[in-house]
Length: 68
Length: 113
Image (cartoon, rainbow over all chains, first blue to last red):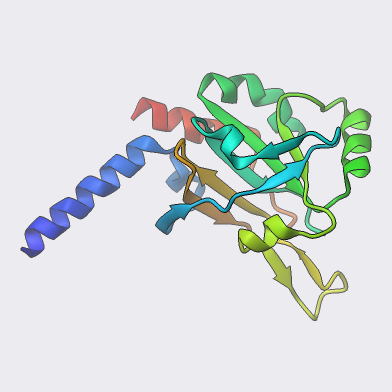
């Protein structure tokens, strides 16, 4: 039973690794458990609003780049 | 941010979108874009003044010892095609940055695997 659980976890890990960028190389942490990204709707410098759902179907690198 | 702007065609070719979020107001972001000729490919969003997105993503730091007091963590999130957060990287030092080149390489490595 433990063997089956471990095999399942390895399979899941392999699938996750294949589906996402190699963030291990950047020492990023898997987000456990994975969860839906919080929705957002924010304006760009021209006032155009971008929503998370607008980006569905793409891998999104989201980062907070100003620190104050 | 400038490095990511220059690399956006390569990110797009890999099916990825770069989204930078700042707590600066929109006019400040617009001025920065104009000054650096950095408008266009990457998406820059302003989370000013409510900082609601920072809060939702757990990326707002409150530090009574800091003169700034409350500020954004330098944080990176990878969201997959279904809208699920898969990876997170928070820099210990908010002045540290990931370069566009190393992030791009991480995407390429995953495509090769």
